Length: 108
Image (cartoon, rainbow, N blue to C red; front, side):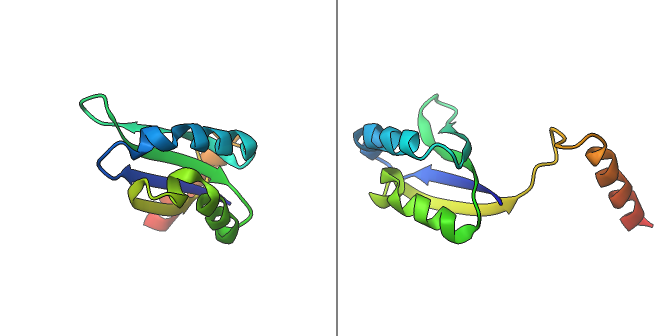
């Protein structure tokens, strides 16, 4: 399953203090990460993180997050987790056309 994790930092310098440990953790557990990176505010400063994971289920995701220093040590003021599925880019040729056909059928 794919999960998007959207996190907003607490104010302060905790991110900088945890960054090396977080990067070590991410490197040691890189397989389930499909995308990850900082959320950058209008002023150019990092305000949070967005991560896309591919894991077996929510329980597996929760274990990964609990062990990550950013999560474990309280960097985030808020965390949202949402299941998702890939539509673009197409995993299989024609799948976008199938999505369109379903959408148009539902409108009838």
